[in-house]
Length: 169
Image 1 (cartoon, helix red, strand yellow):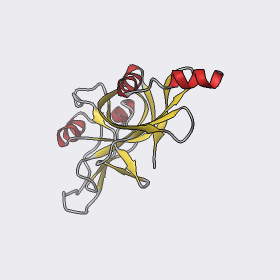
Image 2 (cartoon, rainbow, N blue to C red):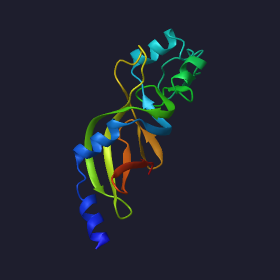
Image 3 (cartoon, rainbow, N blue to C red):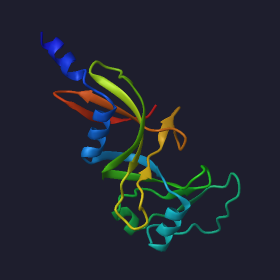
Image 4 (cartoon, one colour):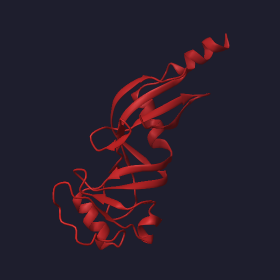
């Protein structure tokens, strides 16, 4: 009888509920990467959030890093900005962030009972003049971060739906 009750309660999961859960409270992100526009990257240099890499020319296949400063660390940027190996510069973040959902593209049963896997284009909100728009979070495919795929969130039902973690597959 209890199992039937939980199944009924857990069955009300949908895109709207997923969006509300993601956007309603800050989400703990540990070592996720966000994408920067060129303008955001340049603004970060001007605002002393990270250093300009020395001797970097945007040549195909060339990678460079821009060291994050203490001002950047204060905004929860946790590692250097990486340039050249992807279309856009990107940087690692760590901490609790408010998120904005841009699109939910897939929702399916999770690996365990009372879980759901939700693929969603989501972005971290960072309060600073350089980041007027939220920074898109990179997804993971075949163990590699990629700017081409959205992250996948694992939701778990336990007296209500909540985010369990971001899945890195």
